Structures are given as structure tokens and as C-alpha cells.
Length: 243
Image (cartoon, rainbow, N blue to C red; front, side, top):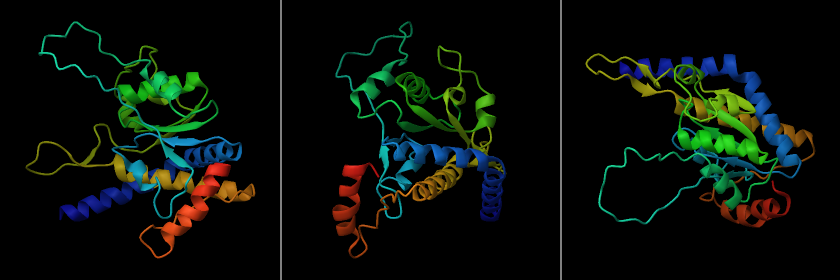
């Protein structure tokens, strides 16, 4: 059955993550903990089609992760014309976003591009480093090594990061060949990224506890008493302490 093939592929993927990424996961978790302990903040960009929401303000997750994203809305209802000769690159927009945010030098931002060539992500990583932030990059190294850089610096996404976490996805994402279907099936990066993100967080929590810092962990708002606990304990502590 395709179900069995998928489950085997998923198990093999997570085993590869365990075998190859343990050191990087520990390094990333320690960076998160050290940043929080020093009074800094940790931001999650869009991790592989929004896997980050598995950790943002939900039961069992830490309060110290905060979202960082931006968009530019332009109101211009003009007729369509040929703009193929116009440079529509967005390099530098990431710095505007950082200056308009609550970020400070020394903070950490976790960003993701499976291919390593998503222009908005690469731009934000580059500008974050210039701003004085630390960058943790989620990517597929197999994919990233197979494509050319898109940034004017000539650097690839993973070359801009302080810590690189390889989600071990194959180039072009999908894991399985299915007879009768031209495209490969079953994206790898989502399940691997969630696994890595929770692993990184586990290291961070343990490191903070070792430093004598008890990070706020949210309870499920739908479980009796959970919402009250979050509102009266976890959120006020985060406002005062940053964790």
C-alpha cells in the first residue's frame, strides 16, 4: 500500500535527521537558550509552509517564541502593462521590516527555505545579519546545493546563517515515485522541520532550566483552567521577564 510506503519513508527521514542533525539541533537550542537568558528574543519566520504555528502560543509550547513576518501592500489599480524590463527585486526590504519590528541586535530569528533560494527569506536573513541578529536556517542541503544563489551577494541562504538545520528533504521535496503519476509524491520538509523544531526547543528548555530559568510553557486553552493559567501566570511573566 502507498500508506505503508509513505510511513516507511517518513521513518527513514526522521532517522536520517536523528543521525545527521543532532549536533546542529543542540547548537541551535543552546543559542536560543543563551539569547533568552541574556534578555533577548527569539522570532520564528514561516517555517516550511507555516510549521512554526505548531509552537506559537499553543498548549505544550513555550511563550518565548514570537512570530516575525512582513508584507508590503501597494494600492495601485492601474491597467496591466508589460513590466518585463522592470527590476522587481525586493532586496533590502527585510531591513525595513526589522526596523519597523520590535527586534534588537542580539536577538535570534529562525528562517526557512527548503530550496535555499526563496528571495524574501534570503533577503531577511542577509539583512538580519547586518542588523546584528543571529540566524538559524532551516533548509534542505541537498536541494540548496543543486540550485544557484539568488542574492546579489552571491551567497546562498545557508551561508548567511549562524546555525544550519538540514531537514534532509530530497531536492525538489518529494520522497516517493508513484506509478501512474508523473510528479513525485509526499513532501519531506514539513514533518522533518516540525521534528527538528521541537527538538531544538527541547534543548533550549533544558538549557534554560540548567541556568535557573523556568520558561513559561502554555497550557491548552480548551482544557479546564488552561486559559486562566496562561493569562494570569505565563503571559504576565513573559511581559516582565521575556520568558
